[in-house]
Image 1 (cartoon, each protein chain N blue to C red):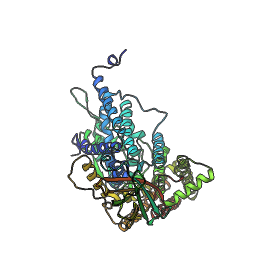
Image 2 (cartoon, chains in turn yellow, brown):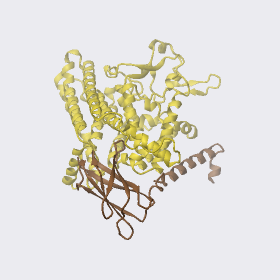
Image 3 (tube, rainbow over the protein chains, first blue to last red):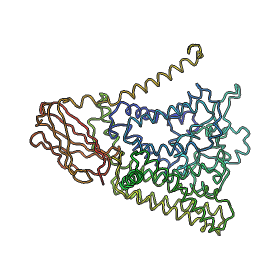
Image 4 (cartoon, chains in turn purple, red):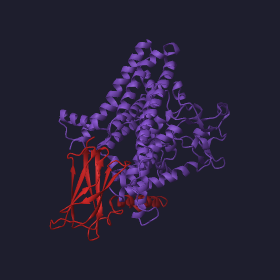
Length: 461
Length: 145
């Protein structure tokens, strides 16, 4: 079924319809987020489904990405022949955009504004169209899309991967359609793209940068590529020379991306609890600042750049000392940073899972009101009392279990990385500082989830 | 050189399609708050104010007092009102209670409580004595936890 040419489109079309509904209601619907599809579907349901899909499957939401539907006309209508600029390689621009997105989410209360949420969606369609219409390959996905980076990094903890079934089949393959694409022998015309993120299946390792777009699966003439179950710890076992990426120990940009998402998981939740407002007010008073975006910018620079950098340098340096390693410090820090991904992902699952399980049913009254407003009396009067899918005690228990599993997975990943880096006799000593850092993050995550929620748009007024 | 001549025969309909798409988005964006918003309040001449106790508001039981007045400042009695509290973030269970009419255009919530700290949206809706519908929304920032 995955080999069917339109398999991805079938998944994308319903999500395109939902995106259109979000834009439509964001623009013409009620300004109150709880009454509007643009307030409910992206911030409650989509985020919840994303983390659940990553947890039980893989990068399903890049596979179904509706923004990519505009790539097809963009590639046909615009030149699409430029190479991505060499002076902004890898993930640097994506990291900046991700930080800007996290900051603007808090600074401009995107969650409380259906109108701005609709504009974000429109902006996404426009940016995907323009970037992929001008540049070769999947430049938007690889170098820009903040949502895609979230999926890429967190799918390191997913149980499924797009990978080769039998490597011996690849060794005898002469056409390499999975990367080069399949061409019509008669006309020479490209009939099926290969991987546009430049992941050559034979050397692809792990889920990083894989959009599950199915191109390689459909291009392979031997039916030798599929979505295959795996042990997520395999992501961390070897410092493989990954196709399209290289060795993770040598990719500082990927490591920083991972760290931004790990610490972003804490900061994103931190922005919704009571103590943060008292801290931000205190900070504004000390610095004499009256601009909330400026105060938040300082908090984000501290929380996403300064603090993570300080903590991982400390952990890496201590690890270096304990193992008496002669290896350079930076590659070591880069590689070990990925070990924190499962714990960061667990925090995202706990946070977004909380919103999803607390408010999944709120889509029912919003749908009822929408239909009534457009003159369709099909589902009756809005049942505004509907909200939670699970009881609060059950949600609390799930959060706790998920965070504990995240810690265990990070400890296991850290040990695996340490064993591969320093050898079995020094593995525990090498992993110890990172385990302490993981424990600190785990304690911070539990403290945050135990705080009473206080979702404020303003804290200085 | 005109745009018509600059673009090929194939490119002209594509540009037109793009322009129609952009125009549609801009038109939609400029139509903010029209879905269902016009019918719910037919009492423009009636002013509504709310007062909340405790002040400043905090998590826990609270009293929302609604005051209705006509354009001459006279109290409007006999209305049947419902008070709904929502968090500004979607996905939270709303608090929906009735309001008991007291004297001189004052109505008091029956069992209202702030279930969570943060920004709230208070919506008061109902029917006036003369049958007209009324609905007003108030933003309430910073309910402390």
